[in-house]
Length: 268
Image 1 (spheres, rainbow, N blue to C red):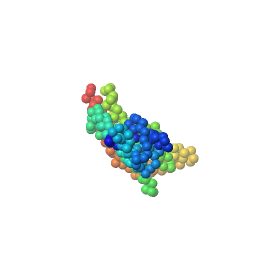
Image 2 (image 1 turned 120 degrees about the vertical axis):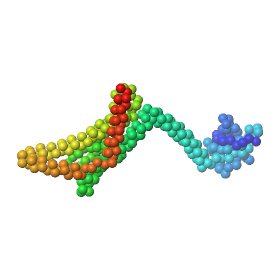
Image 3 (image 1 turned 180 degrees about the horizontal axis):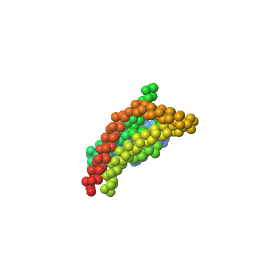
Image 4 (image 1 turned 135 degrees about the horizontal axis):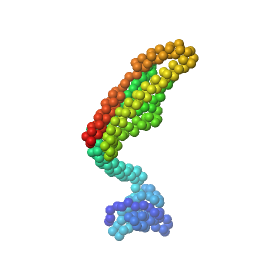
């Protein structure tokens, strides 16, 4: 008597015709009498557990129920996923070690925290005092569009350049030219540019208002608007505040710039 094996019903016994099982790469004939021991009627493509005698003849056939098969499939899938997960983790750890060796642990940590701060921490908050309050990350500031009705941000050209800038420190370690170390200052340059853009847009709005007043009411109206613009500037200064994200990004950007400059001078 051999141990039970898994097989598949290929052909159901009918009349004088024997049934066929596919078992271990072979087709084995079988009869129902005294062999089929499941309450379920035999059907083609059923998965069964077959016990053979020493001569290779089926002595017991039991259908494997769908629930058992599903549990086995789930177990196989979980095991396969676990194996792939372990392989992916090992590969990720090896890749991270390569990056660490190239960049240096301190630089890698600074660049990673900078990336988080750049996109997810509030760098600028506008609070008008009339129920309007909105925070912007550094990336949002690069994509900000100011108008007389408010401020909106979208991920456009300047925000994309900001993304490139915070990724540059990760790529510098693979660049051979000595000057490549200076690219560590890219985030600092883009941070400065972000606030230059905001200042420029504010100045542009005020200039447009003054020009429009001059066309409608002459120099007197223009002077009045200029006075209003000065007051508006003071109000904006009070309404706008720098958030934790700005100071963190500024500190980390300065740190990367210093690291890049030191490496540039060291390899002189």
